[in-house]
Image (cartoon, rainbow over all chains, first blue to last red; front, side, top):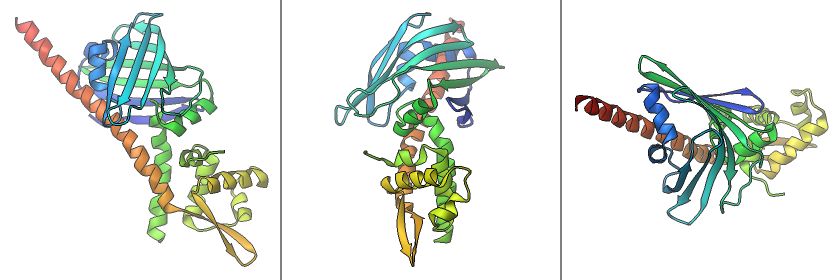
Length: 170
Length: 111
């Protein structure tokens, strides 16, 4: 499958798109069932996911936490489920839980919308992360400890282009 | 205030400044000509970038030129690479998991 595409539809949003070679109902399960989610929603290398609690009904809560095997650092996300359209759409809030990392992000929840679209057994998954404000988005960007890390790619592309230019001249 | 390199690139004007001085060292006046904002605003961005150690001052005669610290920029690249890898590996693991689920379904149908 092609690598994820990321874009910035507005000042407060980040959009990430990726296709998977499976029907929507299977991709859906991978997002909705804790035992399946923890198998793919991995943290940085060397981190495990000791907490993955999910009650994925409307109004239900979830809690994810990653832990470094090396130095006891922890961080995670919590949130509440807002909308569930089986095999098609999942909307939930997300609050960054900085654990003991010593970084901060906006305290207002962001809203994550995941849309699943099945075309002949290939499912495209579009994830939209809407931050409470541009400041929150930029704060999330600055830490990178978020789904918002995707947005750093766009900046990175600019930065890399700059570096290549500079190196060509050096 | 504690600064880190990510503050340097978290603002579009600062990224534009970085892009400009990557090509050649520039004075604050020359830089300001590229932006609609006030000179003060550009100076403020230059101060943040300097505090982030992404750019350094270089006096030439009576003028001060700003130039890019390439090694500092590479830090960002290395750091972001780590996170790009997390997402890549997440989605790759999801690919693998889905292949497994598909296989399971096939077998269940046979039974």
